[in-house]
Length: 218
Image: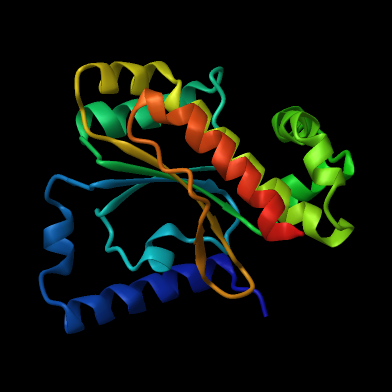
C-alpha cells in the first residue's frame, strides 16, 4: 500500500528518533558546513538514491538530478549546481550516473511521445541519432542499455567542455569527471571507463568508451 503524506511525517519522526538513539550527535554534525569530495549528477528516478548506492553519509555527496541525467549548456540549473560544487565546495570527483531501464532513455530509443518532456528527451534522441549505426548493430534487447551508456558518455563530455570545467582545469584544479551506470536489477554500479581529468583526455577516452559498448553488448 502506498504511503500517505501523514505517513511520511510519522516515518520521519521515527527515523530521526532512531538516528539520535543509535548515533548521538548525528544531526548536530549535519549543521556544520558541508565539505563533500563528490558530486553526483543522476536521474530523478526514485529507485536511484545516490547516498545509499555509494554508502556515503549525508553531507558527503552533492547531488543534482533530472530526467535521464542530462547536462546541456542551456540548462542553468545543472550548470549552476556544477559551478557551486567545483568553485565553492571544491569537489574532486563528479559522477554522471545513468541507470538501466531509464524511462527517458527508453522513450527516446522508441521515439515515443509523452508531452512537454519530449523537448527534454530530444537531447537523448540526439545521442541516439549520433550513434544510430552502433545501436542498429546490436541485438534489439541490448539497445536500451547501450543507449543508457552512450547517454552517460555524452553527458560526461558536456560536463567536461562546460565553462565551469574549462576554467577549473585551466587554473590547475584537480577534478575528475566519471561516467557510471547503475543496475536497478542488481544494485551494482558499472564503470563506463570514461573518467576524465583534463581536456586532453576527452577525445581518446570518448572513442575508447564508445567502442567498448559494441564489444560488451554483442
